[in-house]
Length: 297
Ligand code: TXA
Ligand code: MG
Image (cartoon, rainbow, N blue to C red; front, side, top):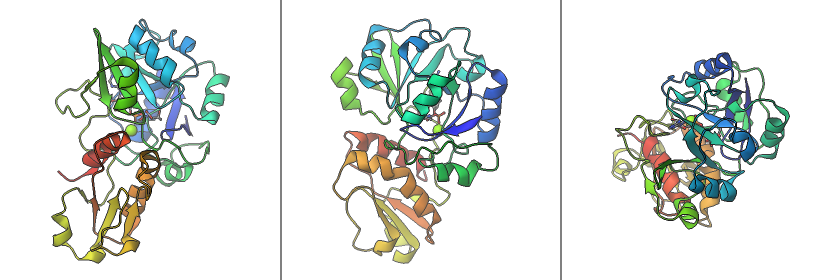
């Protein structure tokens, strides 16, 4: 088991076909075994070895977005251990775009299961240093591939009859997906569906309480508040306490910065974090999804 870079976030990777290796991943992350893992490989041909069906819409998406920040849920073959899929009949598969990850995957005879390389519930790592800070003493090796250039996890997509369903908003926007397969259903906010991925409510969370409601600005002194904002500083808070995701309002840049900035705010001498939601479009939607899950309810 080693930590590997991908273009979305760093992953904690082990042989997906070896139940012992997979069990170790769950243990190191302190992750409940009802939460299934994504299987990574380097080609669509390889994926056919692990899945029973590859519907036409899934193929179209694969052609457009792989290698890339997209995960498809497809009916699994018996070769994939039940531990990987938490007993579900589908397996999550992805071809990552990071050159180091691809080279590693091409050199292996097996696919790798890899959840984000963070302790369960905390913010995902987007640098090797993030991984080292939290899991360094528990894993033998971290492959350093620099900063993740997408910065948020993959978009997870499933298929039901003719319908395309997004279960987790991520690095590929809803708009981009709809350009390829037409209207999709977004079920990312479902709280009741245990099959729905990425959906555990409290997730991606810093240790300091994070609030989305501006009321918090009146309850603490300006020095006690850290701010995460899309493109503009708040006039009422010292600038040193503020992280701006993208001064030029670029969603790609904002996504790249999101998790690093959440960590930075977590480490600042402030008591609470106020995060201002982005416009609900493009990657702003996926970023808002992470902020909502990270926030105090
Ligand atoms: O970008 C990513 O997807 C990163 C990199 C490392 O590839 N991986 C990642 O893995 O975010 P993880 O384990 O942190 O999140 C995977 C999500 C989980 O929320 C899990 O519930 C969901 O995928 N998932 C996996 N298999 C599933 C399945 N068969 N059905 C439904 N959800 C599934
Ligand atoms: Mg994760």
